[in-house]
Image (tube, rainbow, N blue to C red):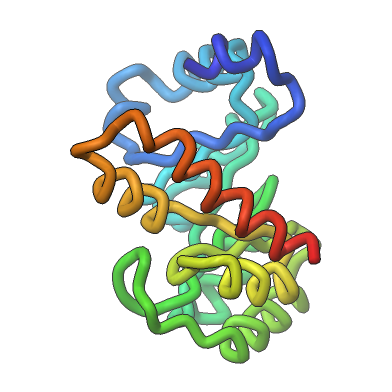
Length: 184
């Protein structure tokens, strides 16, 4: 799919997010070679902790793949230093304690944590979780380098399951509204 996408768009960064077991099944180096050949820019492997990723991170970086790590409100400074030393591309700050799409987004707390992380790294910081509308996207964009939206899109698609022909327009409108708010 990435190779097909790259036929018409060579600029938009593509990051694969998933679990380690498919990468292990394919083989780390084989996976990295295929990902780079297809046009993938980075990999976020949610179950590969930084403590166990030094060799993988180094190999991915040597092959031209960014290694992206998750940071949470509960990440200790010791672990944060480790993540900042290994992470490339961007770091993904999980803005709330809880599940993706949670309503408990506190922009002040996010801004304080982002400032703290910025004191340890120059790697861009993108924020996800709890961003559900143009207002929350705008607020997070003001304090971070990137806004990550997922659950609200999945939920919108699920709401439209009975009328799938409406999905492209409805999802596009939601994304456009968020983009417009962030650009304002």
